Image 1 (cartoon, rainbow, N blue to C red):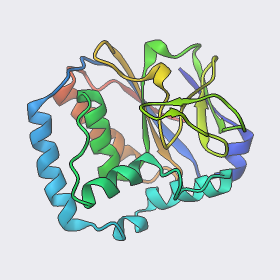
Image 2: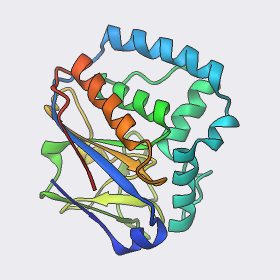
Image 3: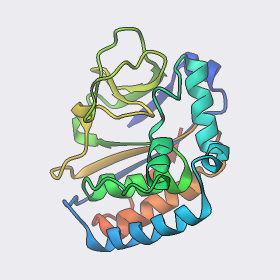
Length: 219
């Protein structure tokens, strides 16, 4: 898999660095040991943060700023990491989807990065380009229907958009049949902290998704 950062993203978000992990996996509908870890993590997280204090987390700040620079209001279309953090800090439980999605969500909350998760076998072509969404560009967000991605950072494959910090696309979403995972950690604040988030992701993949952790690479 090859990654291209478009000139428009380089201009709007010059600090951007991405970390991708490509891994063979075994997905399951539910993983009890993972959810025990999630529940313990959630309790500790609520003791450490508030909905106000998470705004100072550099990855969340930087992603919000990237939205503004690209032309999107981050308060109307919240980046996924911020939305997940706010959800659990308001006392709501984390959504339970499946093991791959659940562990990606945990890493996203812990790190503050908005993280994309894709079925690698559903991606068309061998190149993903990170650009900015255009007016009227078709995009079906997972569980959201048609999403207005104008002014959002968006990954496109040979067919079109597959991932934004707010929502990934239905076309390449993870399912119980997924055997090859591509996950992308989006560092709009730069490289600092990406390696730690990637290490945590690979650790969870080894422990709960029948994986050897896969291959990680920066772009």
